Image (cartoon, rainbow, N blue to C red; front, side, top):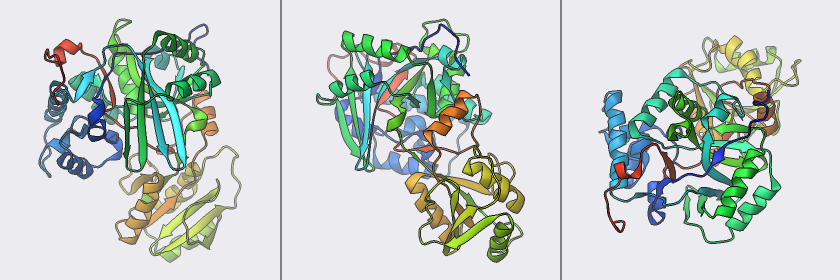
Amino acid sequence: MRGCPGESMKFLPFRALRARSDLAARIACPPYDVVSTQEAQDRARREPESFIGVIRPEALFPTGEAPPEQELYAAARRRLAELVHGHRLVFDPRLAYYAYELQTPHHRQLGLVGLMAVEDYEERRVRRHEQTREDKLLDRIRHMEAVGAQTGLVQQFHTPLEPLRERLRAVTARPPEVDFTADGVRHRLWQVADPESLAFIREASASLPATYIADGHHRAEAGARVGEGQPQGSPRRFFLTALFPEDELRIEGYHRLVRDLGDHTPETFLEALRHQGFALEPAPDPRPPRPGTFGLVLGSRTYRLRYEGERSGTLLDVSLLDERILGPLLGITDPRRDQRLDFAGGERGLDEVVRKVRDGTHSAGFVLHPVSISHIRSVADAGGILPPKSTWFSPKLLSGLVLHSFEMPARWVRETSEPEG
């Protein structure tokens, strides 16, 4: 599937609303969809400057209180206004891109934050691999409209462009505007505002035949919906994007937890797995070593599963799990909505699988091997959809560092000569 012939990507610089450099470590927080309500409330209590109240406004209410949606959206807008009026978030005076680097002891990725045109999404030059849910979309749309801004990044990837990579290396040779470590990940941000670099980046990104959504399908679709019917050039005709070369991204497994085994005991479930064509062997580590193998956590025991039946070479492990285990053995036929099925992603997710099975809140956990970037790209190019919760990109981009405001600064900011300390 190709974009419209003769059209080029529009990935543009913008005048960002962003965390003040000296407060960025206190303001920035994980994206809204990877923290629970309890975690959000704990973070809001622990760090008064946190952006968490904007993206998870339930954190601003007493524990156990469930205010109506409209009160939540109003609270999110008030919290954003407080951060702006208190000069915790400030508008940059110039159009700019932002080089964003995430680094761990074993991984580094460097990309660019800018605005992607809604028309590129509409005309499928921005390609996706995940279905969106209407309830989650409506939540993101209402949130964007309430706060007058896009508060979270859509992470995308592209085929590597070496000239662009070299340009970014030159940018990162100077000291960053933001530099801090959170949860073991170092986050650094550089403003890129000189005219030569702006022109170079815009021209280089325009040469891309397509970009691919890695993380943030609901944010992208909500951004496109908010931009529908808006005039060209309107701030609502763009959505906030962080664009990375595909060879710098890291994908981890997205694991499954089941609350009960249905009519099975642990022993009959193991026997049923054998009848379904799976070879089982005890394994001290549930991490699957390669595609086509699974980890199984069952009570206090861990196993490695290997499917020995016939399968299509393009069938993903998660599809095999759905079709050979979750559906026929456990009666879970709608993984998107079945309340007996939960998900846990990444290294933290692996620990969560083991913990929840060990403490008895879940009966079994399945540990999956990561999907490859090339598979995601081929599915998206063909206009296909991966099963829900197939990919977990790590590390996660933080919210609150850079925002795209739909509203003019004068509507947000009191006139003042210097930010308050």
